[in-house]
Image 1 (cartoon, rainbow, N blue to C red):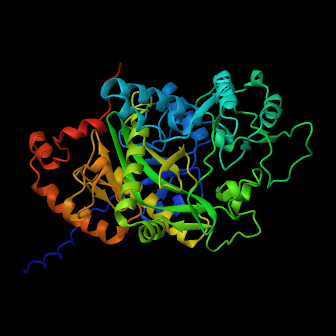
Image 2 (tube, rainbow, N blue to C red; image 1 turned 180 degrees about the vertical axis):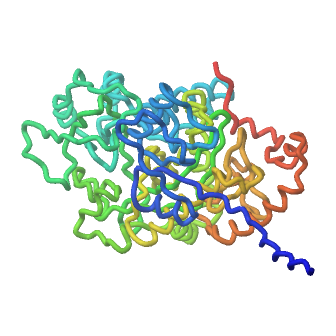
Length: 502
């Protein structure tokens, strides 16, 4: 009796890992970017639930959601090892204007004690600023001494150009002062989502109600602090219009400090020709898209923006590459010093990361001035080009966080991100930077802000080489540290390292 034929061999079973999940309180660009990566969006938990659901790996949240998540984490269940939140606990140490000013002043003092006054003075990259009401007397003394100076008042936690007032005469300031009752400070919670706070507008008694295009004195009912600073009266103009630049910095750790700077960004232009004769015209003096899009001259296709690469090419054509490189070297230093001022103040939670939006104004002498740092930069695109930029930014942020485990930790460029600082300055490969000179004529830092961002082919090559390198890297930590070898023994490095705490 013949035996039955053997069954055909089973096809090999290929393991397909389940898709990663993300949570997001914003619709649009962030969700689009994560879905393109093959991630699935996790459903929002019940409003009555006190559990932090564990079926997500990445959570892009606003400050209100972040606060709720931290309360649940503290009281009920800690985050799992693989989970990442899109804010640090006290990220507002640099995103609130009053905290930023205080921390930079404190850090400048540390630099002066460690390296001398000349080094400390290199931290003077914000216009002279006073915090109200705590420094009201100091401001009045300076105000009387420099009577011809223009000043600008901003809510410490304001956003999108709301609550800003430009003035010169003492009468204007005193009138504004009487409209604001400092005793009505209503919220001391450092995690309050002030960016989404309702705004109450109050005008002075001797002026009629202003229209939206005027910079009338306003009060943010949830902000108890304002900053007043010297107004930059000689901004660099293109076509007679004022602009500032927005670029992005990803911080994955404050303890130790580790940050990446994104190559792309944009210049935001005002709609009107710059003039000091119309101080209350927001279409001349403010560049916020939320304001400019209400202008009759706003172009929805272009969005009143230039890409940062176009701006850099324009400036290089007019002033030479070497001078423009010096401008961007100074911007790199501003980023490092600003973040260093918050080290030890911002929580070092390994579950957290932050995408900061830096706003910088360039004056007529090509000197950059830091205006503010945003902990919740808008990812809503104003046009197609802006959508592509922000889609790539979110995608590259997820790649840097590497929850899929595809990288080696040796990378100094990931998509559009360049590793700028990793517990010390990171320097560029000479093959990438050419003969470019770095800050203070030192080595070129690993930053290419405004340069070509060929992120797609770079990521393709990066993942291919990373898979090979991971199989070759020995497991001994000493060998891995030798491979990283990013820091230099150059004596000038000490000026980019944070001084010891007093």
